[in-house]
Image (tube, rainbow, N blue to C red; front, top):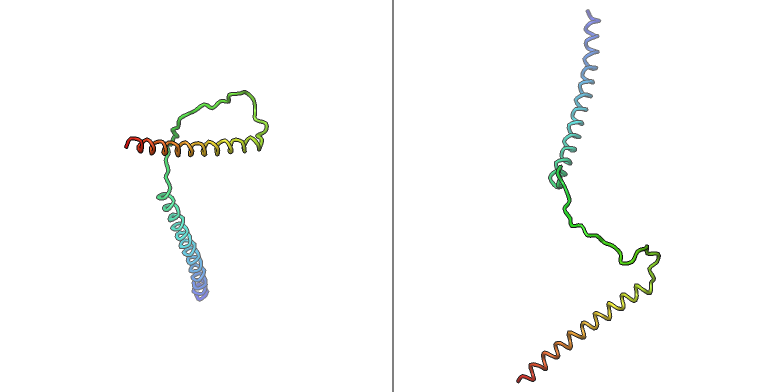
Length: 111
């Protein structure tokens, strides 16, 4: 009978050890699930989602005036375009100044 009592006492710590291991794994799994769920919850409410999405846009056909491929764009051409734009802006500013002067002289002449 003593052998049976000793055997039960040896089995008890083994059972407690396995219970603790299983309980620890369960707690760790629960913590991981809560963290993962928190990330999912945060993502779900901060990002838009849909299962019926489409893009609406206007289509415009772009075609060249001359057939062929562009082989090279010369630096001088780009500089000439920039210069033409600068000159156009300067001319536009000069035109506005002349129009203002005209309106001013016209108002002085009417007096």
